[in-house]
Image (cartoon, rainbow, N blue to C red):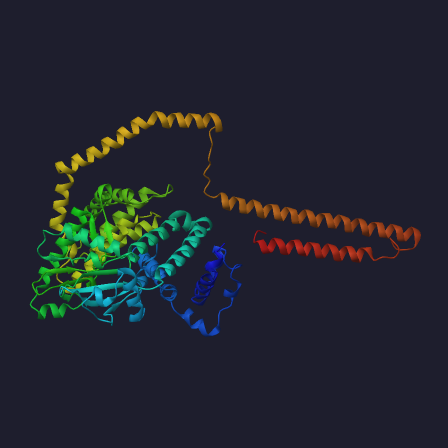
Amino acid sequence: MPKYRHLKRYRQIANSVVRHGFGHLLTHLGYSHLLPSVRRARKSETALLEYTRAQRLRMLLEDLGPTFVKFGQLLSTRPDLLPRDILDELTNLQDQVPSFPYSEVEAIIVRELGRPVEEAFHSFEKKPFAAASIGQVHRARLHNGQEVVVKVRRPNIVRQMKTDLEILRQAAKIADRRTPWGRIYNFEDIVQEVQRSVHDELDYLIEAENGERIRENLHTHENVIIPKIYWDFTTSAVLTMEMADGIKLTHPEKLKEAGHDPEQIVRDLVEVMFTQIFQHGLFHADPHPGNLAVDKDGKLIFMDFGIVGRLRGERKRQFILFLLGTISHNPRQLVRALSGMGVLSRRIDRKELLRDAERLMDKYLDTPLKRINLGQAVSEIFALAYEYHIRIPAEFTLLGKTIMTLEGVIEDLDKDLVLIELLRPYSNRLIRERFSYRLIKETAFEQFFETTDFVFSLPRRLNDMFDRVDTEGIPIQLNYPDIDRTFLHLDRLANRLSFSIVLLAFSIIMAGLIIGSGLVASITGTPLLWRIPIIEIGFFLASAMAGWLFWAIYRSGKL
Protein backbone atom coordinates (compact mmCIF):
# COMPACT_ATOMS: atom_id res chain seq x y z
CA MET A 1 0.00 0.00 0.00
CA PRO A 2 1.56 3.32 -1.06
CA LYS A 3 2.17 5.91 1.61
CA TYR A 4 -0.56 8.53 1.69
CA ARG A 5 1.86 11.46 1.43
CA HIS A 6 3.17 10.01 -1.85
CA LEU A 7 -0.23 9.28 -3.40
CA LYS A 8 -0.04 12.23 -5.80
CA ARG A 9 3.34 11.07 -7.09
CA TYR A 10 2.02 7.51 -7.39
CA ARG A 11 -0.76 8.79 -9.64
CA GLN A 12 1.67 10.80 -11.79
CA ILE A 13 3.90 7.77 -12.27
CA ALA A 14 1.00 5.42 -12.95
CA ASN A 15 -0.58 7.72 -15.54
CA SER A 16 2.77 8.05 -17.31
CA VAL A 17 3.22 4.26 -17.25
CA VAL A 18 -0.18 3.79 -18.92
CA ARG A 19 0.45 6.58 -21.41
CA HIS A 20 3.62 4.85 -22.62
CA GLY A 21 1.91 1.48 -23.05
CA PHE A 22 3.02 -0.36 -19.91
CA GLY A 23 -0.30 -0.36 -18.05
CA HIS A 24 -0.23 -4.15 -17.68
CA LEU A 25 2.63 -3.74 -15.20
CA LEU A 26 0.27 -1.97 -12.80
CA THR A 27 -2.02 -4.99 -12.78
CA HIS A 28 0.87 -7.37 -12.12
CA LEU A 29 2.09 -5.20 -9.25
CA GLY A 30 -1.37 -4.78 -7.74
CA TYR A 31 -1.66 -1.00 -8.26
CA SER A 32 -4.68 -0.92 -10.59
CA HIS A 33 -7.24 -1.04 -7.74
CA LEU A 34 -5.40 1.74 -5.89
CA LEU A 35 -5.17 4.00 -8.92
CA PRO A 36 -8.36 3.49 -10.93
CA SER A 37 -7.94 6.70 -12.92
CA VAL A 38 -4.96 5.31 -14.79
CA ARG A 39 -7.13 2.80 -16.62
CA ARG A 40 -8.18 5.52 -19.05
CA ALA A 41 -5.64 6.74 -21.61
CA ARG A 42 -6.37 9.70 -23.86
CA LYS A 43 -6.65 8.98 -27.56
CA SER A 44 -4.29 11.86 -28.36
CA GLU A 45 -1.49 9.91 -26.68
CA THR A 46 -1.93 6.63 -28.56
CA ALA A 47 0.74 7.75 -31.04
CA LEU A 48 3.32 6.74 -28.41
CA LEU A 49 2.36 3.11 -28.94
CA GLU A 50 3.80 3.24 -32.47
CA TYR A 51 7.33 3.25 -30.99
CA THR A 52 9.15 0.07 -30.04
CA ARG A 53 9.02 -1.31 -26.52
CA ALA A 54 12.59 -0.17 -25.83
CA GLN A 55 11.94 3.36 -27.12
CA ARG A 56 8.79 3.69 -25.04
CA LEU A 57 10.66 2.55 -21.93
CA ARG A 58 13.39 5.13 -22.52
CA MET A 59 10.83 7.90 -23.07
CA LEU A 60 8.93 6.80 -19.94
CA LEU A 61 12.04 7.07 -17.76
CA GLU A 62 12.88 10.50 -19.19
CA ASP A 63 9.30 11.63 -18.58
CA LEU A 64 9.42 10.50 -14.92
CA GLY A 65 12.43 12.65 -14.08
CA PRO A 66 15.99 12.47 -12.66
CA THR A 67 15.57 9.49 -10.32
CA PHE A 68 14.19 7.25 -13.05
CA VAL A 69 16.80 8.49 -15.53
CA LYS A 70 19.49 7.44 -13.03
CA PHE A 71 17.68 4.11 -12.62
CA GLY A 72 17.69 3.61 -16.39
CA GLN A 73 21.35 4.58 -16.66
CA LEU A 74 22.21 1.95 -14.07
CA LEU A 75 20.09 -0.66 -15.87
CA SER A 76 21.95 0.17 -19.11
CA THR A 77 25.06 -1.27 -17.44
CA ARG A 78 23.29 -4.56 -16.64
CA PRO A 79 23.35 -6.91 -19.67
CA ASP A 80 22.82 -9.68 -17.13
CA LEU A 81 19.32 -8.29 -16.44
CA LEU A 82 17.91 -6.90 -19.70
CA PRO A 83 17.75 -7.96 -23.36
CA ARG A 84 20.01 -6.26 -25.91
CA ASP A 85 17.39 -4.02 -27.58
CA ILE A 86 16.46 -2.37 -24.27
CA LEU A 87 20.11 -1.99 -23.22
CA ASP A 88 20.99 -0.24 -26.47
CA GLU A 89 18.08 2.17 -26.11
CA LEU A 90 18.79 2.98 -22.45
CA THR A 91 22.27 4.19 -23.41
CA ASN A 92 20.46 7.10 -25.13
CA LEU A 93 18.89 8.35 -21.90
CA GLN A 94 19.42 12.07 -21.50
CA ASP A 95 19.25 14.44 -18.56
CA GLN A 96 17.28 17.15 -20.32
CA VAL A 97 16.73 19.65 -17.54
CA PRO A 98 16.77 23.44 -17.60
CA SER A 99 19.03 25.47 -15.34
CA PHE A 100 17.52 27.01 -12.22
CA PRO A 101 17.66 30.78 -11.56
CA TYR A 102 20.62 32.55 -9.98
CA SER A 103 18.47 33.76 -7.07
CA GLU A 104 18.15 30.14 -5.91
CA VAL A 105 21.88 29.54 -6.48
CA GLU A 106 22.67 32.55 -4.29
CA ALA A 107 20.29 31.39 -1.55
CA ILE A 108 21.87 27.90 -1.50
CA ILE A 109 25.43 29.29 -1.31
CA VAL A 110 24.50 31.65 1.54
CA ARG A 111 22.81 28.83 3.45
CA GLU A 112 25.64 26.33 2.89
CA LEU A 113 28.71 28.55 3.25
CA GLY A 114 27.22 30.90 5.83
CA ARG A 115 28.24 34.06 3.94
CA PRO A 116 27.15 36.03 0.88
CA VAL A 117 28.43 35.07 -2.58
CA GLU A 118 30.43 38.35 -2.78
CA GLU A 119 32.22 37.54 0.45
CA ALA A 120 33.02 33.94 -0.47
CA PHE A 121 34.14 34.64 -4.06
CA HIS A 122 35.92 37.53 -5.75
CA SER A 123 33.75 37.00 -8.82
CA PHE A 124 30.95 34.59 -9.70
CA GLU A 125 29.36 34.06 -13.13
CA LYS A 126 25.60 34.09 -12.73
CA LYS A 127 24.98 32.06 -15.89
CA PRO A 128 25.89 28.36 -15.56
CA PHE A 129 28.00 26.76 -18.28
CA ALA A 130 26.60 23.27 -17.59
CA ALA A 131 23.38 21.89 -16.06
CA ALA A 132 22.35 18.35 -15.13
CA SER A 133 19.65 16.62 -13.09
CA ILE A 134 21.57 16.87 -9.78
CA GLY A 135 22.99 20.38 -10.08
CA GLN A 136 24.62 23.00 -12.29
CA VAL A 137 28.11 24.42 -12.66
CA HIS A 138 29.30 28.04 -12.51
CA ARG A 139 32.70 29.61 -13.10
CA ALA A 140 34.10 31.73 -10.27
CA ARG A 141 37.29 33.23 -8.88
CA LEU A 142 38.52 33.11 -5.29
CA HIS A 143 39.93 36.15 -3.54
CA ASN A 144 43.47 34.77 -3.97
CA GLY A 145 42.99 34.87 -7.74
CA GLN A 146 42.49 31.12 -8.23
CA GLU A 147 39.95 30.26 -10.93
CA VAL A 148 37.48 27.62 -9.77
CA VAL A 149 34.31 25.87 -10.83
CA VAL A 150 31.38 25.71 -8.39
CA LYS A 151 28.77 22.96 -8.54
CA VAL A 152 25.48 23.84 -6.84
CA ARG A 153 22.88 21.19 -6.06
CA ARG A 154 19.33 21.75 -7.27
CA PRO A 155 16.82 22.92 -4.65
CA ASN A 156 14.39 20.22 -3.41
CA ILE A 157 16.15 17.53 -5.48
CA VAL A 158 16.95 15.48 -2.36
CA ARG A 159 13.30 15.31 -1.26
CA GLN A 160 12.10 14.54 -4.80
CA MET A 161 14.58 11.72 -5.31
CA LYS A 162 13.93 10.28 -1.85
CA THR A 163 10.20 10.06 -2.64
CA ASP A 164 10.82 8.40 -6.01
CA LEU A 165 13.26 5.92 -4.49
CA GLU A 166 10.70 4.93 -1.82
CA ILE A 167 8.17 4.30 -4.57
CA LEU A 168 10.68 2.29 -6.62
CA ARG A 169 11.62 0.21 -3.60
CA GLN A 170 7.97 -0.56 -2.79
CA ALA A 171 7.35 -1.62 -6.40
CA ALA A 172 10.52 -3.77 -6.32
CA LYS A 173 9.35 -5.57 -3.16
CA ILE A 174 6.05 -6.42 -4.82
CA ALA A 175 7.81 -7.54 -8.03
CA ASP A 176 10.11 -9.82 -6.00
CA ARG A 177 7.06 -11.50 -4.42
CA ARG A 178 4.80 -11.72 -7.45
CA THR A 179 7.03 -12.30 -10.50
CA PRO A 180 9.42 -15.15 -11.36
CA TRP A 181 12.04 -12.61 -12.56
CA GLY A 182 11.88 -10.87 -9.21
CA ARG A 183 12.58 -14.12 -7.38
CA ILE A 184 15.63 -14.69 -9.59
CA TYR A 185 17.14 -11.22 -9.73
CA ASN A 186 15.88 -9.60 -6.50
CA PHE A 187 14.83 -6.18 -7.81
CA GLU A 188 14.94 -4.70 -4.31
CA ASP A 189 18.71 -5.17 -4.29
CA ILE A 190 18.93 -3.33 -7.62
CA VAL A 191 16.90 -0.42 -6.25
CA GLN A 192 19.18 -0.33 -3.19
CA GLU A 193 22.10 -0.13 -5.60
CA VAL A 194 20.45 2.86 -7.30
CA GLN A 195 19.80 4.36 -3.87
CA ARG A 196 23.48 4.13 -2.93
CA SER A 197 24.54 5.60 -6.28
CA VAL A 198 22.06 8.49 -6.03
CA HIS A 199 23.03 9.13 -2.40
CA ASP A 200 26.70 9.45 -3.41
CA GLU A 201 25.87 11.80 -6.30
CA LEU A 202 23.59 13.97 -4.17
CA ASP A 203 26.27 14.48 -1.52
CA TYR A 204 29.06 16.61 -2.97
CA LEU A 205 31.23 15.84 0.06
CA ILE A 206 31.39 12.22 -1.14
CA GLU A 207 32.29 13.33 -4.67
CA ALA A 208 34.98 15.63 -3.25
CA GLU A 209 36.40 12.79 -1.14
CA ASN A 210 36.46 10.50 -4.19
CA GLY A 211 38.34 13.11 -6.18
CA GLU A 212 40.85 13.69 -3.40
CA ARG A 213 41.55 9.98 -2.97
CA ILE A 214 42.08 9.43 -6.69
CA ARG A 215 44.26 12.55 -6.78
CA GLU A 216 46.38 11.16 -3.96
CA ASN A 217 46.60 7.73 -5.63
CA LEU A 218 47.80 9.27 -8.90
CA HIS A 219 50.14 11.89 -7.46
CA THR A 220 53.17 10.10 -8.98
CA HIS A 221 51.68 10.21 -12.49
CA GLU A 222 53.03 13.41 -14.02
CA ASN A 223 50.81 13.09 -17.10
CA VAL A 224 47.53 13.29 -15.12
CA ILE A 225 45.70 16.25 -13.57
CA ILE A 226 43.01 15.76 -10.92
CA PRO A 227 41.44 19.12 -9.92
CA LYS A 228 42.12 20.22 -6.35
CA ILE A 229 39.20 20.50 -3.94
CA TYR A 230 38.76 23.70 -1.93
CA TRP A 231 37.25 22.34 1.27
CA ASP A 232 36.53 25.74 2.83
CA PHE A 233 34.02 26.34 0.03
CA THR A 234 32.61 22.80 -0.18
CA THR A 235 29.57 21.28 1.54
CA SER A 236 27.10 18.53 0.71
CA ALA A 237 25.25 20.96 -1.62
CA VAL A 238 28.15 23.11 -2.94
CA LEU A 239 31.37 21.77 -4.47
CA THR A 240 34.27 24.08 -5.31
CA MET A 241 37.24 22.73 -7.23
CA GLU A 242 40.19 23.97 -9.22
CA MET A 243 39.53 25.10 -12.78
CA ALA A 244 41.53 22.85 -15.14
CA ASP A 245 41.56 24.27 -18.67
CA GLY A 246 41.89 21.88 -21.57
CA ILE A 247 40.37 20.50 -24.75
CA LYS A 248 37.72 17.89 -24.02
CA LEU A 249 37.96 14.54 -25.77
CA THR A 250 34.59 15.30 -27.35
CA HIS A 251 36.59 17.36 -29.89
CA PRO A 252 39.26 15.05 -31.36
CA GLU A 253 39.81 17.39 -34.31
CA LYS A 254 40.70 20.26 -31.98
CA LEU A 255 43.20 18.00 -30.20
CA LYS A 256 44.99 17.34 -33.48
CA GLU A 257 44.95 21.03 -34.37
CA ALA A 258 46.59 21.81 -31.01
CA GLY A 259 49.41 19.39 -31.86
CA HIS A 260 48.41 16.54 -29.51
CA ASP A 261 49.10 12.93 -30.54
CA PRO A 262 45.86 10.88 -30.27
CA GLU A 263 47.79 7.62 -29.93
CA GLN A 264 49.78 8.95 -26.97
CA ILE A 265 46.57 10.25 -25.34
CA VAL A 266 45.00 6.80 -25.69
CA ARG A 267 48.04 5.00 -24.26
CA ASP A 268 48.20 7.40 -21.31
CA LEU A 269 44.47 6.95 -20.71
CA VAL A 270 44.70 3.14 -20.75
CA GLU A 271 47.72 3.22 -18.42
CA VAL A 272 45.95 5.49 -15.92
CA MET A 273 42.70 3.50 -15.98
CA PHE A 274 44.56 0.19 -15.62
CA THR A 275 46.46 1.61 -12.63
CA GLN A 276 43.25 2.82 -10.98
CA ILE A 277 41.39 -0.47 -11.48
CA PHE A 278 44.00 -3.13 -10.82
CA GLN A 279 46.43 -1.39 -8.49
CA HIS A 280 44.44 1.11 -6.46
CA GLY A 281 41.04 -0.61 -6.61
CA LEU A 282 39.34 2.80 -6.87
CA PHE A 283 38.61 4.10 -10.36
CA HIS A 284 36.77 6.80 -12.26
CA ALA A 285 33.72 4.86 -13.48
CA ASP A 286 32.36 7.37 -15.99
CA PRO A 287 35.27 8.14 -18.37
CA HIS A 288 33.16 9.45 -21.24
CA PRO A 289 34.66 12.19 -23.46
CA GLY A 290 32.81 14.96 -21.61
CA ASN A 291 34.62 14.07 -18.38
CA LEU A 292 38.09 13.90 -19.95
CA ALA A 293 40.27 16.68 -21.35
CA VAL A 294 43.87 17.36 -22.36
CA ASP A 295 45.72 20.49 -21.23
CA LYS A 296 48.22 22.47 -23.34
CA ASP A 297 51.09 20.27 -22.13
CA GLY A 298 49.35 17.05 -23.15
CA LYS A 299 48.35 16.03 -19.64
CA LEU A 300 45.08 14.14 -19.09
CA ILE A 301 42.43 15.91 -17.00
CA PHE A 302 39.81 13.83 -15.17
CA MET A 303 36.60 15.57 -14.08
CA ASP A 304 33.39 14.67 -12.22
CA PHE A 305 33.92 11.99 -9.59
CA GLY A 306 30.26 11.44 -8.75
CA ILE A 307 30.48 7.84 -10.00
CA VAL A 308 33.48 5.78 -8.92
CA GLY A 309 34.02 2.04 -8.84
CA ARG A 310 35.72 -0.10 -6.22
CA LEU A 311 37.40 -3.42 -6.83
CA ARG A 312 39.40 -5.03 -4.06
CA GLY A 313 40.44 -8.39 -2.63
CA GLU A 314 38.57 -11.39 -3.95
CA ARG A 315 36.49 -9.26 -6.32
CA LYS A 316 39.65 -8.04 -8.04
CA ARG A 317 41.00 -11.59 -8.40
CA GLN A 318 37.69 -12.77 -9.87
CA PHE A 319 37.64 -10.02 -12.49
CA ILE A 320 41.29 -10.65 -13.39
CA LEU A 321 40.35 -14.29 -14.08
CA PHE A 322 37.38 -13.08 -16.13
CA LEU A 323 39.53 -10.68 -18.17
CA LEU A 324 42.31 -13.22 -18.72
CA GLY A 325 39.77 -15.85 -19.77
CA THR A 326 38.31 -13.40 -22.30
CA ILE A 327 41.67 -12.32 -23.73
CA SER A 328 43.05 -15.88 -23.89
CA HIS A 329 39.80 -17.38 -25.33
CA ASN A 330 39.58 -19.87 -22.44
CA PRO A 331 35.90 -20.85 -21.95
CA ARG A 332 36.49 -22.98 -18.84
CA GLN A 333 38.28 -20.18 -17.06
CA LEU A 334 35.53 -17.82 -18.21
CA VAL A 335 32.80 -20.04 -16.72
CA ARG A 336 34.75 -20.38 -13.45
CA ALA A 337 35.12 -16.60 -13.33
CA LEU A 338 31.39 -16.09 -14.01
CA SER A 339 30.56 -18.61 -11.29
CA GLY A 340 32.78 -16.75 -8.83
CA MET A 341 31.54 -13.31 -9.87
CA GLY A 342 27.81 -13.93 -9.96
CA VAL A 343 25.00 -15.53 -8.03
CA LEU A 344 24.03 -18.74 -9.83
CA SER A 345 20.63 -20.36 -9.81
CA ARG A 346 20.58 -23.85 -8.29
CA ARG A 347 18.89 -25.14 -11.45
CA ILE A 348 21.55 -23.87 -13.82
CA ASP A 349 22.94 -26.36 -16.34
CA ARG A 350 26.70 -25.81 -16.02
CA LYS A 351 27.52 -28.13 -18.92
CA GLU A 352 25.21 -26.20 -21.23
CA LEU A 353 26.68 -22.93 -19.95
CA LEU A 354 30.18 -24.21 -20.77
CA ARG A 355 29.07 -25.21 -24.28
CA ASP A 356 27.58 -21.76 -24.88
CA ALA A 357 30.77 -20.14 -23.57
CA GLU A 358 32.80 -22.30 -25.97
CA ARG A 359 30.57 -21.25 -28.87
CA LEU A 360 31.04 -17.62 -27.85
CA MET A 361 34.81 -18.02 -27.66
CA ASP A 362 34.84 -19.78 -31.06
CA LYS A 363 33.36 -16.63 -32.51
CA TYR A 364 36.53 -14.74 -31.55
CA LEU A 365 39.03 -17.60 -31.98
CA ASP A 366 39.97 -16.89 -35.59
CA THR A 367 39.48 -13.12 -35.30
CA PRO A 368 42.71 -11.09 -35.27
CA LEU A 369 43.30 -9.44 -31.89
CA LYS A 370 43.22 -5.95 -33.38
CA ARG A 371 39.67 -6.56 -34.68
CA ILE A 372 38.19 -7.78 -31.38
CA ASN A 373 35.92 -5.34 -29.59
CA LEU A 374 36.53 -6.04 -25.89
CA GLY A 375 33.51 -4.03 -24.77
CA GLN A 376 31.25 -6.01 -27.10
CA ALA A 377 32.81 -9.28 -25.90
CA VAL A 378 32.21 -8.34 -22.25
CA SER A 379 28.65 -7.31 -23.09
CA GLU A 380 27.99 -10.63 -24.85
CA ILE A 381 29.38 -12.58 -21.89
CA PHE A 382 27.14 -10.64 -19.50
CA ALA A 383 24.24 -11.31 -21.87
CA LEU A 384 25.06 -15.01 -21.51
CA ALA A 385 24.77 -14.50 -17.77
CA TYR A 386 21.32 -12.97 -18.37
CA GLU A 387 20.28 -16.05 -20.36
CA TYR A 388 21.33 -18.36 -17.52
CA HIS A 389 19.89 -16.16 -14.75
CA ILE A 390 23.31 -15.39 -13.28
CA ARG A 391 23.04 -12.18 -11.27
CA ILE A 392 26.28 -10.22 -11.64
CA PRO A 393 27.18 -7.91 -8.70
CA ALA A 394 27.19 -4.17 -9.31
CA GLU A 395 30.99 -3.80 -9.05
CA PHE A 396 31.50 -5.96 -12.14
CA THR A 397 28.72 -4.50 -14.25
CA LEU A 398 29.98 -0.97 -13.47
CA LEU A 399 33.47 -2.05 -14.47
CA GLY A 400 32.08 -3.60 -17.66
CA LYS A 401 30.35 -0.31 -18.47
CA THR A 402 33.62 1.54 -17.80
CA ILE A 403 35.47 -0.72 -20.26
CA MET A 404 32.80 -0.19 -22.93
CA THR A 405 32.89 3.59 -22.42
CA LEU A 406 36.69 3.60 -22.54
CA GLU A 407 36.67 1.60 -25.77
CA GLY A 408 34.30 4.13 -27.34
CA VAL A 409 36.65 6.99 -26.38
CA ILE A 410 39.61 5.13 -27.93
CA GLU A 411 37.71 4.49 -31.15
CA ASP A 412 36.79 8.17 -31.47
CA LEU A 413 40.41 9.26 -30.99
CA ASP A 414 42.20 6.67 -33.12
CA LYS A 415 40.34 3.97 -35.05
CA ASP A 416 43.56 1.98 -35.56
CA LEU A 417 43.97 1.37 -31.83
CA VAL A 418 42.02 -1.43 -30.12
CA LEU A 419 41.64 -1.73 -26.34
CA ILE A 420 42.17 -5.49 -26.17
CA GLU A 421 45.46 -5.12 -28.05
CA LEU A 422 46.54 -2.30 -25.72
CA LEU A 423 45.74 -4.52 -22.72
CA ARG A 424 47.90 -7.41 -23.92
CA PRO A 425 51.07 -6.17 -22.12
CA TYR A 426 49.04 -5.55 -18.95
CA SER A 427 47.59 -9.07 -19.04
CA ASN A 428 51.11 -10.47 -18.67
CA ARG A 429 51.60 -8.17 -15.70
CA LEU A 430 48.34 -9.40 -14.18
CA ILE A 431 49.48 -13.02 -14.55
CA ARG A 432 52.79 -12.25 -12.86
CA GLU A 433 51.05 -10.35 -10.04
CA ARG A 434 48.58 -13.17 -9.56
CA PHE A 435 51.43 -15.52 -8.69
CA SER A 436 53.57 -12.93 -6.96
CA TYR A 437 54.84 -13.50 -3.44
CA ARG A 438 52.92 -10.49 -2.13
CA LEU A 439 49.57 -11.67 -3.50
CA ILE A 440 50.14 -15.28 -2.38
CA LYS A 441 50.97 -14.01 1.10
CA GLU A 442 47.85 -11.80 1.21
CA THR A 443 45.65 -14.68 0.01
CA ALA A 444 47.25 -17.07 2.53
CA PHE A 445 46.59 -14.60 5.37
CA GLU A 446 42.94 -14.20 4.27
CA GLN A 447 42.46 -17.96 4.08
CA PHE A 448 44.21 -18.45 7.42
CA PHE A 449 41.95 -16.02 9.27
CA GLU A 450 38.82 -17.37 7.57
CA THR A 451 39.82 -20.95 8.45
CA THR A 452 40.63 -20.15 12.08
CA ASP A 453 37.40 -18.20 12.43
CA PHE A 454 35.48 -21.21 11.06
CA VAL A 455 37.30 -23.68 13.33
CA PHE A 456 36.77 -21.64 16.50
CA SER A 457 33.12 -20.92 15.73
CA LEU A 458 32.31 -24.51 14.69
CA PRO A 459 31.53 -25.84 18.25
CA ARG A 460 29.15 -22.95 18.95
CA ARG A 461 27.40 -23.42 15.60
CA LEU A 462 27.04 -27.17 16.19
CA ASN A 463 25.56 -26.52 19.65
CA ASP A 464 23.10 -24.03 18.18
CA MET A 465 22.13 -26.50 15.47
CA PHE A 466 21.58 -29.40 17.90
CA ASP A 467 19.59 -27.16 20.26
CA ARG A 468 17.32 -26.15 17.41
CA VAL A 469 16.89 -29.74 16.28
CA ASP A 470 16.06 -30.74 19.86
CA THR A 471 13.42 -28.03 20.28
CA GLU A 472 12.01 -27.63 16.77
CA GLY A 473 12.87 -30.90 15.06
CA ILE A 474 14.37 -31.23 11.60
CA PRO A 475 12.45 -29.25 8.98
CA ILE A 476 12.18 -30.95 5.60
CA GLN A 477 11.83 -28.74 2.56
CA LEU A 478 10.72 -30.27 -0.72
CA ASN A 479 11.58 -28.47 -3.93
CA TYR A 480 9.12 -29.39 -6.66
CA PRO A 481 9.71 -27.08 -9.68
CA ASP A 482 6.29 -27.61 -11.32
CA ILE A 483 4.23 -27.43 -8.14
CA ASP A 484 2.35 -24.29 -9.29
CA ARG A 485 1.29 -26.01 -12.50
CA THR A 486 0.26 -29.12 -10.57
CA PHE A 487 -1.90 -27.10 -8.15
CA LEU A 488 -3.47 -25.30 -11.11
CA HIS A 489 -4.47 -28.64 -12.64
CA LEU A 490 -5.83 -29.84 -9.28
CA ASP A 491 -7.77 -26.58 -8.88
CA ARG A 492 -9.31 -26.98 -12.32
CA LEU A 493 -10.15 -30.62 -11.61
CA ALA A 494 -11.83 -29.70 -8.32
CA ASN A 495 -13.86 -26.94 -9.99
CA ARG A 496 -14.99 -29.25 -12.77
CA LEU A 497 -15.92 -31.92 -10.23
CA SER A 498 -17.88 -29.38 -8.15
CA PHE A 499 -19.61 -28.15 -11.30
CA SER A 500 -20.56 -31.69 -12.29
CA ILE A 501 -21.84 -32.53 -8.78
CA VAL A 502 -24.00 -29.40 -8.65
CA LEU A 503 -25.48 -30.11 -12.09
CA LEU A 504 -26.12 -33.72 -11.09
CA ALA A 505 -27.84 -32.64 -7.86
CA PHE A 506 -30.12 -30.24 -9.70
CA SER A 507 -30.83 -32.86 -12.34
CA ILE A 508 -31.92 -35.33 -9.61
CA ILE A 509 -34.09 -32.67 -7.94
CA MET A 510 -35.69 -31.73 -11.27
CA ALA A 511 -36.28 -35.38 -12.13
CA GLY A 512 -37.91 -35.91 -8.71
CA LEU A 513 -40.14 -32.86 -9.16
CA ILE A 514 -41.23 -33.94 -12.61
CA ILE A 515 -42.05 -37.49 -11.46
CA GLY A 516 -43.77 -36.25 -8.28
CA SER A 517 -45.84 -33.71 -10.17
CA GLY A 518 -46.97 -36.35 -12.66
CA LEU A 519 -48.01 -38.80 -9.93
CA VAL A 520 -49.90 -36.17 -7.94
CA ALA A 521 -51.72 -34.91 -11.03
CA SER A 522 -52.75 -38.44 -12.08
CA ILE A 523 -54.15 -39.26 -8.63
CA THR A 524 -55.77 -35.97 -7.55
CA GLY A 525 -56.21 -34.27 -10.88
CA THR A 526 -54.54 -31.09 -9.57
CA PRO A 527 -50.91 -29.91 -9.93
CA LEU A 528 -48.40 -30.32 -7.09
CA LEU A 529 -48.33 -27.62 -4.34
CA TRP A 530 -51.45 -25.60 -5.04
CA ARG A 531 -50.90 -25.08 -8.76
CA ILE A 532 -47.54 -23.36 -8.26
CA PRO A 533 -45.37 -23.95 -11.42
CA ILE A 534 -42.70 -25.85 -9.47
CA ILE A 535 -41.06 -27.33 -12.57
CA GLU A 536 -40.73 -23.98 -14.30
CA ILE A 537 -39.41 -22.28 -11.13
CA GLY A 538 -37.00 -25.11 -10.39
CA PHE A 539 -35.75 -25.13 -13.95
CA PHE A 540 -35.21 -21.36 -13.80
CA LEU A 541 -33.36 -21.53 -10.46
CA ALA A 542 -31.25 -24.48 -11.59
CA SER A 543 -30.29 -22.70 -14.79
CA ALA A 544 -29.46 -19.48 -12.93
CA MET A 545 -27.32 -21.20 -10.30
CA ALA A 546 -25.53 -23.35 -12.87
CA GLY A 547 -24.87 -20.26 -14.99
CA TRP A 548 -23.54 -18.35 -11.97
CA LEU A 549 -21.24 -21.24 -11.01
CA PHE A 550 -19.99 -21.60 -14.57
CA TRP A 551 -19.29 -17.84 -14.83
CA ALA A 552 -17.44 -17.75 -11.47
CA ILE A 553 -15.17 -20.63 -12.47
CA TYR A 554 -14.65 -19.18 -15.97
CA ARG A 555 -13.60 -15.79 -14.54
CA SER A 556 -11.07 -17.47 -12.26
CA GLY A 557 -9.39 -18.92 -15.34
CA LYS A 558 -9.29 -22.36 -13.77
CA LEU A 559 -12.03 -24.23 -15.57
